[in-house]
Image (tube, rainbow, N blue to C red; front, side, top):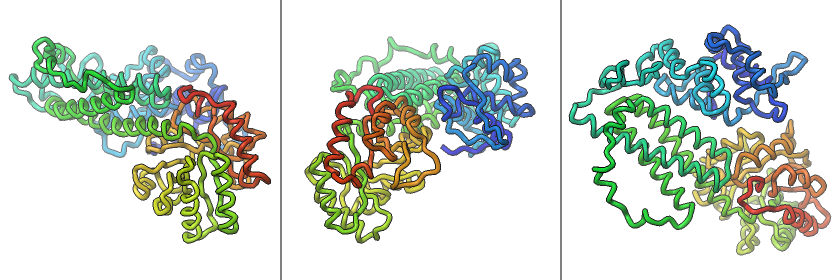
Length: 535
């Protein structure tokens, strides 16, 4: 996700990129972000931290594993992708200040708010040191002229007087509620809030224990935290006073379909729907009480839609690609007969996925080979993927299309090729892999792992990136880039049992023998699809 930063924030991020953990130097972590803010001593965030006696030494003492890895030749540190915790903090800052002019340019105090209000160890530590996110948000809002609209005042909930009496109309964006309507409105909001929280918990249990997906679990947990923060705008006493379960006419009404769930995927679907319905109810009735509450819930609802797609596509893709281990990329060869012989060999050898990638052929020659490949793979169980050309993939009735970071987006590819077609995305960093999940990709091509003769790259993320993806993401992912039998054990050791190769098969003296050797190695190291290391 692209964001805009002030000059001071960008300098802080540059400083933060110089700090890495000993275990992982590929991400900008939340502790590093905090150190980056402290390295910009004149910024507002550093001033706010100083009030709580938080300095670089205190942060280093708490996280001794964080080390300075900045270049020694005066070169600026290279930008790093944000870790899950750092990304969640940035998103939380944007969400909590959603009523500010958009797009929001993130200042250092905004970054600090996101760090303090999040649900990770840095946030907990900051709050223990006295940095109150509610008071911090109120200070930021006052600074920018938003002192009342949706603010979290220290010790006082928005919409609640210091004496605990709800005062409709006392804050900008809140309307007056007739006395006869107060209890029914708060009863609705209380019920919808409970349903949304319960649904989020059920969905989190699914992505955590069934999918075993750390990335999706983190996103779900953050939504749950942000929902709690948004609902804090409601006076808790009013919601509890309005609650009436014993006299609720709905408690005795139960549809037959609610009594049984065929499997866990049905449980998932039901609770994703319940989450979105509850958020809609909270948003609509929240407008009566607090317009800023409604705005915060609306943003959550849109995030829930994106999350829903990511979870369902991950689940469906795991099933569709359950047996896909060996993915071979081929070009159009010098003649169509040579292409036919190679394609037939791959089909007969049991390759699981074949991709047609050729930058030399014109559209006519490329489509001719694509249609031939579709004819040869039809009924074989082999999936046929077209590289970079969803238009030709649609014309050739391919099973999928693969796009790179500099090519069409997943959205554009689906628009052209249709919703049923598999869409694969190249990921050269963990941040790109996370974004591809949210974009709705069906699988990832992760690399380049090693140098290869078919495509040139300035740098190689290597097995380190494979390990990061294997730990965090359950969307099917193929390691790619210079992989052959000689280095396959290193790929397997990184947690991947899916590979995409080109030269190792297409340029081999005996492609069929090369396929058999790779399949045997992959088969001997594959595990059940439910294990975390299974890619």
